[in-house]
Image 1 (cartoon, one colour):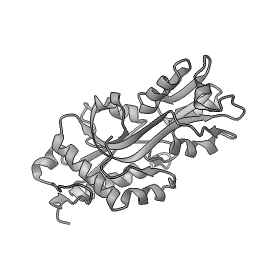
Image 2 (cartoon, rainbow, N blue to C red):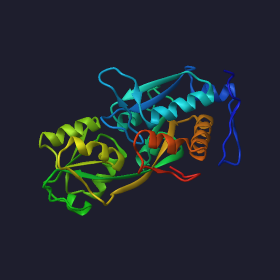
Image 3 (cartoon, helix red, strand yellow):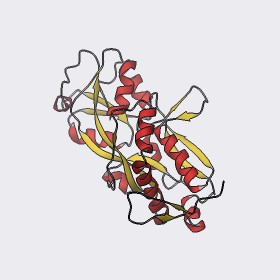
Amino acid sequence: MPMPDRIVTSAAAEDIPISPAVLEELAPTRRLRVAVPISLTPSAVYAVRDYPTGPLRGVTVALAEALAAATGLPLDLVAFRGTGEIQMTAESGRWDVAFLPADEERRALVDFGSAYHILQSTYLVPVGSRIKCVADADAPGVRITAVRDSATLRASMRAAPRATHLAVDSPDDAVAMMHGGNADAIAMGRESLLGMAPEIAGSRILDEYFLTTTTAVAVPKGRPRARALVAAFVEEAKASGLVRRVFDRFGLVSALVAPPGAAP
């Protein structure tokens, strides 16, 4: 298959050419290395893997495959335990592209392109919990677990400063914390929590949110042409309906697609 010479964007005023120089900046190893976090259940960010060594499946995997096809680059999926681990390795040279929830702390570590998803984070609580709303979680003695260095953990710490926050390496670890009676709430995005709820009998997801942000494509700092290219790709993926289709394919029918031109 011949390599395409541009990404045609329906929503952007200017198409982004795919030149050898742009591809070298995007993928210095000549392979597109996309960071993918893994969980028990899929979300707009997290992929799943059939235990123990099966292929990764999920929204970000599908988007990575489409980006590789659009650029003509061979694809390597680089698995991580959580989004915090991805952001903290942005300068390591381990990955070229990621899909991450945006916040101010993370903008200091990566350069975001276009947003493809509206993320709303809240709490999952076990059966019989006294936590009925977000404000109830802000109390001494309440133990909230969330993925280490995640945008959701940082937002929960602001929303519930009197609670004790327990950082874990992955969503699976958060579920284990609650099963072990060591957490009173799990803080994550709603789609992730909807997938977790069946794993915790009688659990309940709060209606309110303590964080609303966007999930967007990102590249390591100092790659402006690569950032422009992946931003154009996301705009085209939204305009063509690809993002909506992959959400629905993985059962995320309530996930919200970010509007055209949405900033992270």
